[in-house]
Length: 382
Ligand SMILES: Nc1ncnc2c1ncn2[C@@H]1O[C@H](COP(=O)(O)O)[C@@H](OP(=O)(O)O)[C@H]1O
Ligand SMILES: [Mg+2]
Image 1 (cartoon, helix red, strand yellow):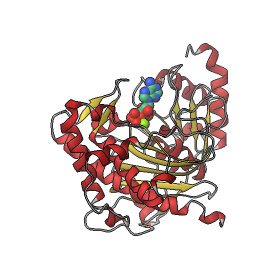
Image 2 (image 1 turned 30 degrees about the horizontal axis):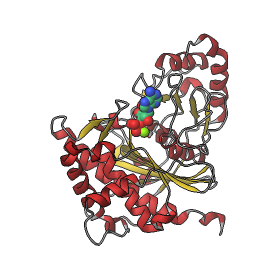
Image 3 (image 1 turned 45 degrees about the vertical axis):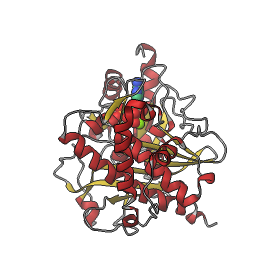
């Protein structure tokens, strides 16, 4: 097969189903925000949150991938399981998931995908969710899904992402990132000269033309793309106004902006502030939920993303796979804090990750930051 064609069929289905998932999430987020914090949000054993949207997206993506490629050919590594959902007191929640999934799948033809002949019942929905129990590894193909990344951002009305990637023999070969509250810039849609650097990537930016986008890429193409979400009666038609995206060309630390998680529990803000200071970053950090941070670097809205989780925390592949490839193909650099590439071949965790994750628009900023980590680590108490 021509290199240019490799994984294009997988990409075609993945982009469409991520658009469907974004529409699903927008609906659920709207209804969550318009009611009081209720039963639609649950705490998991590790105290993290899960919502109707997480399970519904996972079921939808699982069903569409299995239908398109045959369930016997599809291995999916994904964040959610059916434990909470199968409990006897979760009947109401399961009912909501089932209707959300069926509403979403009923729209599949709008996105050029096949919908089920009949609405799915409880067993089929639970089966679609629990089928995503692969643990990845170095051999063969594995889809990697985070149905709602940044669940905290999601329930707070902020940024979140739907992330779908494909790993082939241990390498991420395709990445699709749906960002329902992240803007596509006006200049990118109208092809004008790109001269605006966003200092605010909230959903209320003045730069918004239509809120929400899907970014995608395939490994080795050197290209990454963004499409706006599909609204109203419009049908998704490839390439759906796709525009190529590139990382920022700023390599002067004094002009660069870095992003990091909103939650202190997920990354050490004082350590990154120290690094920022020592490499000469002057702008305030942009604190953003979810993998939208990778999206921001990929389309040039910021230059750096740093994440330093507490010692002992193991990063999961679904929190990074799609974002890492997007940044790389858009021209950026992603490594751990020791300067080595992330290893997606060892199961559900990024095993062997050295200290933290450093994402940059270019090598010059990246070298400075890695140097600063080496210079400061011993005294950092991390
Ligand atoms: N103690 C911890 N340290 C670092 N990351 C954590 C963490 N606990 C959870 N996370 C991960 O951080 C993700 C959110 O990223 P961010 O903080 O950048 O918004 C979560 O994704 P989910 O929201 O999908 O569970 C989760 O996977
Ligand atoms: Mg996540």
